[in-house]
Length: 260
Length: 257
Ligand SMILES: Nc1ncnc2c1ncn2[C@@H]1O[C@H](COP(=O)(O)OP(=O)(O)O)[C@@H](O)[C@H]1O
Ligand SMILES: [Mg+2]
Image (tube, rainbow over all chains, first blue to last red; front, side, top):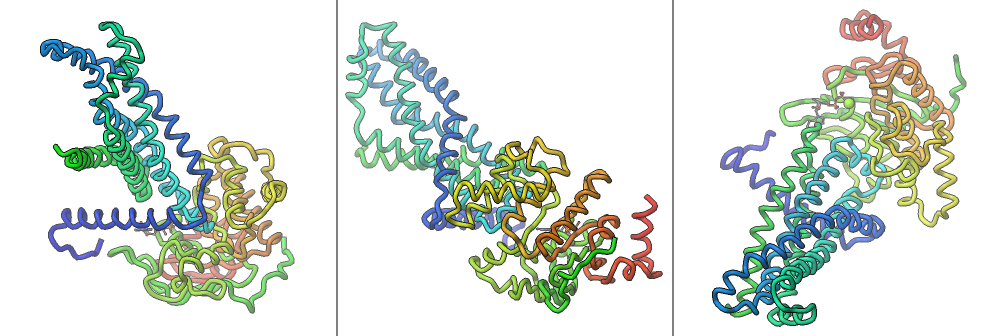
């Protein structure tokens, strides 16, 4: 409030908030490695995250698989390359669609609920209550949630890819002569180890981002009930924004490893 | 109604505050606060809302840091402690929040266990249950053990909040507006509970309120906070036996409502 400002009030508070965010991330790593560990809470959070986003990811992944296959077919037929359909779809889903779909849905479902939950715990002084009962609220609330999103979202991503491929198979089997084994073989013909790893690493980064952003916004929510809504809302906006930036960076890195 | 209060020991100071200042930006909330709390007594801090009563007990429990002055709690200066020492001190302080601050994703049992299992290691399941049931019994709410906080009334939540702090057997209790938002009968029950806690656990307490009935029932001494300083400190009769304008108007406002 009485901090003298260097550039302008708005620009300064932007840089202060980046500084605060870096401190927050630093604190996460420091406290994540220090005992005691809240294993039970981490498992509970993983379960919550999976439970919250599984239905939506199943539906979206499946439909994306069907629609993407359907939309790609005419162009491939035009080039006389309809037999490439399975591997084209597999590349698109494994490399790009599954991580993005999973991350964006989780940002909406999980990120907002973490923001709202911690925000309301801040506003109703539950975080202070943990603090004064000499329990470390950062460890119990933040570390467990961030670890849970970082672990769970890669698993959800792999699941999303699988469901997407099932959707693709359904569409292909209706239009072309194929069977499950043949489809699967031709689909994964073009998928390399690097593709899968790049996507898993992407999902780990996205998962960490969703967790840390939701926790940061919630943990420092403003007093008053509108603080809770703002924390939920801004965690979705900020984590989606960061996910897109990270996507671009990681794709660049993966492509340079592939030698494109 | 005169009780035997031999457990009050005015030769032992548990909280000693001298020349305490605290501001938020341009808002100067506490401006030279001095207060002593003796072992076993209930001190009521009276004051209008926004005068910094909550800020005062948040400083005592180390949730906020003082700008200037000495805050000594159980022989230690709160602003001189590292994190580990502060945690150790907090184990001896119970804090009852204005809105109870129950963990609303946990059952009442889990709320009460939460601090216990993290601080008292190697308790068996049976011992944990026994402790939980004993504090619930002390606040008269054993039947709510498997309920969620959202299912309880305001007065019940207050009691559970107090029980949750009692489970660690604190030496000091800090109550933030224990009767705010409660109906008069529930308020009286909470006031009596505060006195029971004092008698049963021999805690020293600070009770923050703007409710004079609460002050009268629970306070061994009253401290009136005005404009960031304690205007008067003493027994209820001593504090209000005055023609001082600001004290009179506070009294009249409460009893002519
Ligand atoms: N953490 C904080 N940051 C900024 N201002 C605060 C903070 N805590 C309290 N205040 C301000 O200090 C003043 C006193 O607050 P408080 O102690 O809660 O009053 P009360 O006597 O009603 O409990 C209020 O004006 C409040 O807005
Ligand atoms: Mg207050």
